[in-house]
Length: 316
Ligand code: ADP
Ligand code: MG
Figure 1 (cartoon, rainbow, N blue to C red):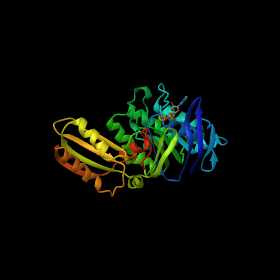
Figure 2: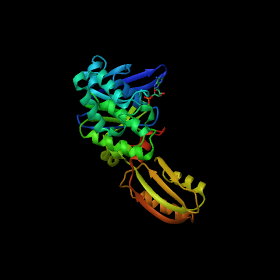
Figure 3: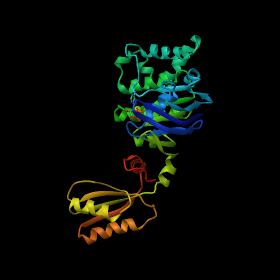
Figure 4: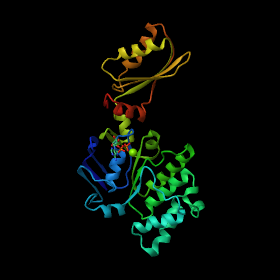
């Protein structure tokens, strides 16, 4: 459905995309994950025909996004990062307008608007001025305008950013429902969003794709393990000695202050490597630090994400 081939984009001296390639099959729900500045919005703007690539190509349903920009836009529903809602309009009028400019014929406008009002749960606010709506409802209006012309593909740029936790849950639920009938690319820097919605994850960092896999395979492939420990001892020594213990491996320690420190030691090494918990236990005992707990933990998507997107580079 979507083919992206070696896209590059430079803004003056900034290389925002350094050769991005991926494919999306019909029906896929892809989480496009990456920290701020990774190039998510730039990729989406190129796909939706709002920005020209510096080089490379992309197509949607066989149509080149540059040469066939208008046709591509008919196939795509796009929710940009900052939703451009016309706040002085009634919800109904705005959706009707959105349908009109995307070529929905006059006699079908009413039905098109009714359909998205139902899909996005806007019945209660359809006669209100957009300016009166809560942020969650504004985002639903944004989704509704993206779908009013019945596109096959939805491209949603950080659809839940800026919402409160309840609104996030609601908008995710809505996206999940929409994902049943659409091909979706959704950008986010929230891992939970990928867990909640996507079946596939593309991780992008500094203009490059660093992972492209199903959520489950990404976890399985991650050569990393995590060990949780509860230990009492001098913070500084604990941290420095854990680092020294595993030279050549990437070690991340998160931990809590307190009488006992709750450590979470994330090590990039083969998951089957049993020496890591053993070595940690030995270290605690040798130093006479009280060890109240030691257990292996599931590696999370967050571990994978961190090991792939922090500055000293990829591990998996
Ligand atoms: P993301 O959406 O992942 O946060 P963006 O695609 O917005 O990332 O940005 C990628 C890079 O391109 C960043 O370094 C950003 O500062 C830069 N950038 C984005 N838009 C512009 C622009 N209009 N002019 C100059 N630099 C830009
Ligand atoms: Mg962005």
